[in-house]
View 1: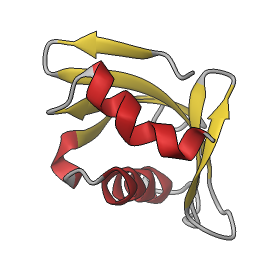
View 2 (view 1 turned 30 degrees about the vertical axis):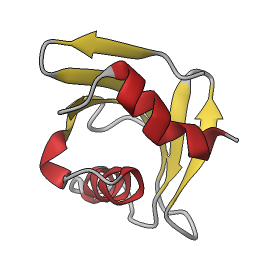
View 3 (view 1 turned 30 degrees about the horizontal axis):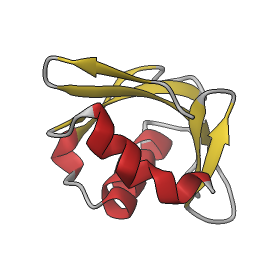
View 4 (view 1 turned 180 degrees about the vertical axis):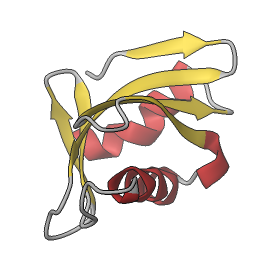
Length: 98
């Protein structure tokens, strides 16, 4: 189970990013974070942008609903997902946690 924090305008979620991977994919849960691998390198925000794109695509959300709020230069990041509540986000992420 990935801990999620409800905030006024959405949900905060921890994400562990693996940049420079062979393919883009949501790889499940690791130590309380959603683990995502991206092919982009960790330079000039390319990996962060790729994570945003992958979350939007895989979860069926708009890119504008996904914002990085901390960890820009760290593999451990926190993202704000707007327009959903904890229950809705849990359902969207559930298929990737099996």
